[in-house]
Image (spheres, rainbow, N blue to C red):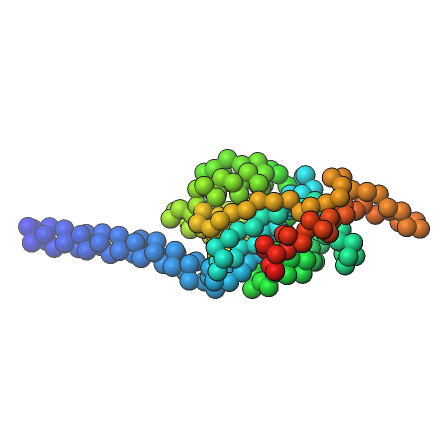
Length: 226
């Protein structure tokens, strides 16, 4: 009887050690799989466009690992470039990203967009145990907080809050949070001639446009892309 008890005891000890080793292995594998993904690679330039449908405002974010900078530009819907005659329309986020990249001469490896209402911003922030009701609040909080080790296990739940209108994935979210906490973060507004859109009627069609200040924007181009 004693031998059986001893043998049983050793079996439970071994099983416990195997389970602990498995948990530790899974823990570090999760972190490794995100950090070693190409889309987390800090040597690549990444572009993000975060659109708040409730307030009709967006944030164009450029992460440049070689310069160790995160440029965050606030932009309004219907912003119009009079030189290239191109409009940034939030109903077409892919096209808006393309226009912004060309505007600031950003050669980017990866591009992402998010289109949500204000409520989803707050819900996503809570997944990281922070309070933020807007994207600019969230970026400010994360620039002070940075990426924590347990955030790697919250990335998928954040994605669920941001879906369906997003092309983000776990590595791209992790890269942004890490960069906000470790790089130089610069917040600026895209300079415009008016704060509110102008209504322009052409024939039977009416367009809303906020014209970019082409003189002031040149400095931003030099800082961000070249």
